[in-house]
Image 1 (cartoon, helix red, strand yellow):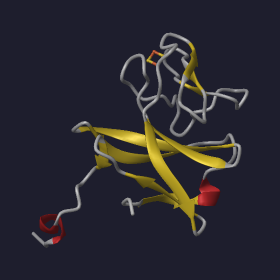
Image 2 (tube, rainbow, N blue to C red):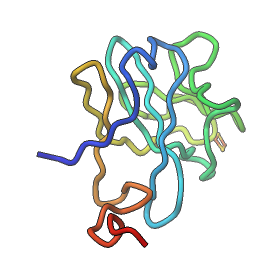
Image 3 (spheres, rainbow, N blue to C red):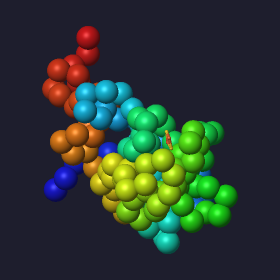
Image 4 (cartoon, rainbow, N blue to C red):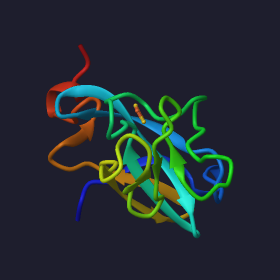
Length: 131
Ligand code: FES
């Protein structure tokens, strides 16, 4: 089974509402991921525009544009399809947000690390030892 890391309670991520950010390491650089809900499903992506590698949310957790149909980069207005992360318009048309595995059970949402997007502090036996 893939590793699962708790993000938040399911009811903290409402349909088309605010997203919840979580800390990650992506390709060795500190960053954030985020989870949103669309069509009842939870989707998670690396919080990094496909156009210029900066965070999408203009205010913390604000990922949807006003119609609630697309995720939007606040800086230059690229819009992304919530289910796929594909850019549907704006400077990075044809680009894509980096998806992050997400699962939901027991009324909670978890993200799943992969080879590129890792937990901020790797869980190693050394880290668990008191210093
Ligand atoms: S940085 Fe996101 S659209 Fe340009």
